[in-house]
Image (cartoon, rainbow, N blue to C red; front, side, top):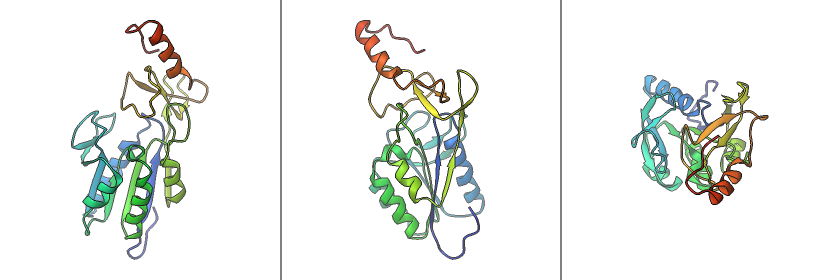
Length: 204
């Protein structure tokens, strides 16, 4: 972000598939803000308990302390008046209200940095991230590495038998794949296999 004059807030959005480094980039920006002695508050959805309860932790192990929230409204309630920079990880889990919450915070003069998935396990836009992208002053789209062929990966491949939109997981449940190797029907096919042979399903 270029130098901003006055007390003008803005929104930065970091998107990409799983294993692309979104949380790591979010943590990097927040730590730089702390080094600059800015007042920082950090939030993550309560549903995300993969690595730590009170930290945002990247897949590579980099971490930073955060508060758990269940709703976007809770973010607004917890933000202190003197806070200058707000970080939000896995924003897609906080629902549509996170868009209005980020807008209100930016309008009040705060720098809001949001990270999340822009597409779901079927390759569809993962709301509300597309709406946040349309409102952001700065957008960073990261790519992972396809585990099948090594090409740049833009998709998150679900490896387990579930068609639920939200299934929180990491390695073994998901992997990054490129456009060519991505199979959006794989989760559905695994559901059918599980029905035919319960308990014998394996990730591929």
